[in-house]
Image (cartoon, rainbow, N blue to C red; front, side, top):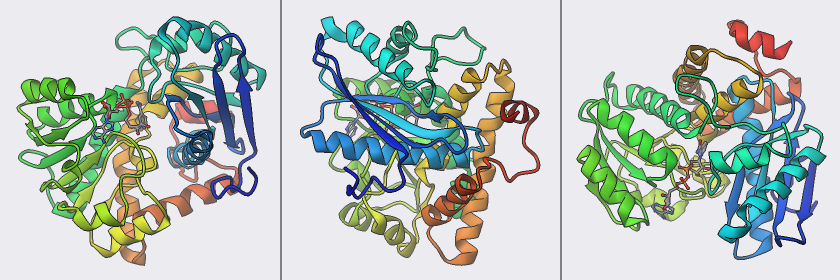
Length: 363
Ligand code: NAI
């Protein structure tokens, strides 16, 4: 494991097994330099155990970068549960997971990710207090992070369209959305409300139908969505979708979406840069959900403050785009430099305009 290409600078990786349900899980703690490692819990059916290890390592490092970029006083970690979990064993499986999270004494804090829900996190909360994304009333802090993630992605798309297409409005802008799950559906609603024209795809035809009927979107097949002709491609399904083949086939000037780890490898960011495609680094644009969960965990009560923090994704991306342009480097490399500098310095914010709520959380 220590030789694994993705292990890099992880602090610890924990493996768990529950004899009663058969559940196996990995929790990776990439960094606690800025605070407890916060990152969601993914439930996925991995063909090989080694794939789960690769996934958790990539995702947990991504969380460190994301949380540092979002100027949050928290580190990065992630959990993966090796599915499938039978419906009748689901509650016991999440109770077991809650005990594992608790056994780490707060070094790792969990929340939802692909395959897990608010209801699952409520079960986890029966065994540990180190969990966020719990049910919240309308207008209060907390709850499903997906709408907050979608809002952040919307801000990122606005920033990218302004920078690349020189357009201040999304009215008439064509956005191709891959993946109509939790985030994808909320994102389509936000985009449609601003007059964007949607081309959408999902492997689940019912989700495609629903979004097409609700927002007048045009359906596209899963194998063609990445090459759809549009102004923006928003990957909102799984990671590693941008590789040499898909980048060569792109017919968009902007890639800006929610999926974690969109770049398949180190070359993908450079290829996008060389092709003149403006890429909004995933760990910057998709921070809305973790901003909400971190506020919930810190006991903050102002939803307005959370929304204002999410709005700042626009400014952050604009700065990254400008710096990448000036330095002729890819946006991903520029963003990673900023995040790693903050992590190494042990300071989430180098920004004098940290909000009062954030300052309190730091204290
Ligand atoms: P989800 O599981 O609810 O939705 C994913 C959707 O993608 C599903 O509808 C699935 O059918 C579809 N899909 C899978 N393969 C596909 C393919 N080849 N072509 C088209 N559609 C495909 O997941 P969720 O929560 O919406 O997250 C989406 C992405 O955003 C994930 O990569 C996740 O890690 C990332 N993300 C999610 C956050 C959240 O708040 N939910 C926060 C930050 C990142």
